Image (cartoon, rainbow, N blue to C red; front, side, top):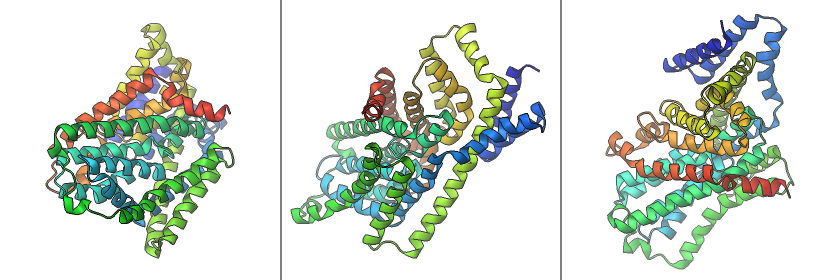
Amino acid sequence: MPYELIAILMFVSMMLMLATGQRVFGAIGSVATISALLLWGTGSEFVDLAFGAAMKAMKWNALVTLPMFIFMGYILAESKIANDLYRMFHVWMGPIPGGLAIGTIGLMVLISAMNGLSVAGMAIGATIALPELLKRNYDKRMVTGVIQAGASLGILVPPSVVLVLYALIARQPVGQLWLAGVFPGLMMAGLFIIYIAIRCRIQPELGPVMPEEERNIPLGEKLKLLPAGLLPTAIFASMIVPFVNGWTGLVESSAIGAAAAFLAAVIRRRMTWEVFEVSMRQTLAVSCMFMWIILAALTFGAVFDGLGAVKAIEALFTQQLGLDPWVILILMQLSFLLMGTFLDDTAMLVIVAPLYVPLVGHLGFDLIWYGVLYTITCQIAYMTPPFGYNLFLMRAMAPPEITIRDIYGSITPFVGVMILALILVMAFPQIALWLPEYVYNK
């Protein structure tokens, strides 16, 4: 049987297993292992190819950062420091049209910089910001779109866990990928804010200003709320500044961030045994999930490399079909959008990375830049019907008056903003590449 046909059968088998509701790591890992056994038997070649590739993950120090960042995010969420942060945005941004929605985007940026997962931003936004916005007569479609869009920043703004996974699979430096996500992430947040400000200026009923009695807060009280925003910023700076300046490595910086978050909760007298236990349990669960997915992905990728599937697909696109490299790249992004309607970002990455990442390199594109493109495309896929991941998270967390139709209708303008950001990064790669080149070439 031709190796190309075997590769197609592997891919189809994996997709069928995922369609039946199997766990991602189980579907990917079992297809890879069974295929390797059938192709190479139980000899040394099988061990070196499949399990040998998977065990490389155990020697990759950057994986230690995953539990550190996850722990940091859960500590800040469970200790309610995020609640204080939203109160600060509420007081300072409430007097302008759409101000609370703009403040929610600011909240999401800081939460993303503390956690690296979109789920955390969604949970905090839905439980803290959504009730406040609805209570103040904000349009329900506007606010659900704001929270979904803001939460998606968690997988782009450093320390992005998704970029750590991409770095492992693509064998690229995590630090450069993080730095590459800074300007695109801030640019996208800025575009969200510009859209909200313009839309609420044109239609003030979508985001009414805060009532007069709530705006009349003495300046002294407003200033007292500023530390709520300074604290998360200080935690982020304590982690990123030493890393960017070369004073610490990646693992040490993640440990500093986790320790700073823990210390902040202690200083605020929020570190109860319950907060600590919940944070530890959630950190363990999420970290183990990611480890299993990484091991399965590396095994699957090793089998694909052994079959020569990547070279066969490259020859199909470039030689037989004669497609331009940019056309191939755009087709890849479109396939991510399609898969994002029924898969999460991690599943998409581990399914297609064995094919796409080597192909992108062979086509002459920068793999750091492509990591940012992949992440932005995942953000868009997260919010596109019928089965966008964030859509269902919002439906599970939203109050009954917000219907699934409202949720679907809320994301259209924000998806348009994300597509604009994607086009800008594709057209001007230096938006993503300038900062890592500047830092690492100093």
